[in-house]
Length: 134
Image (cartoon, rainbow, N blue to C red; front, side):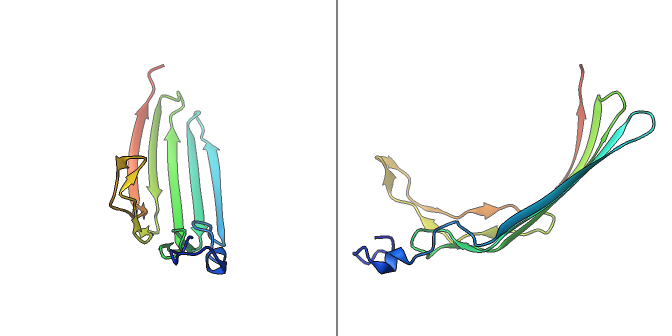
């Protein structure tokens, strides 16, 4: 009885499957350039799309449409000891969350309660420096 009306009938069978977006796709690419002297630059980018979809079994909660763009560039020194990276995640700043889902008061006797709201972080941009000693 997914919709909570007290009977299992066509109303339950006609509900959409949760977290099963009609369209999802992604595309990405990487490209490396070997520079004179042996150092290397690597570039990467990816884009992902997900249609809106219901989040809960009873189709009351839903996840909004989502678009995510990630990119980064790395510079590696010729001796492969230093790596300097600039990266961005969720560059479109597609902050998103689904509807709140009520959690049961307990699961197998363990109290949980409350709600769950799936959340996607907003834009993250960073710089990373790595050094290998071996």
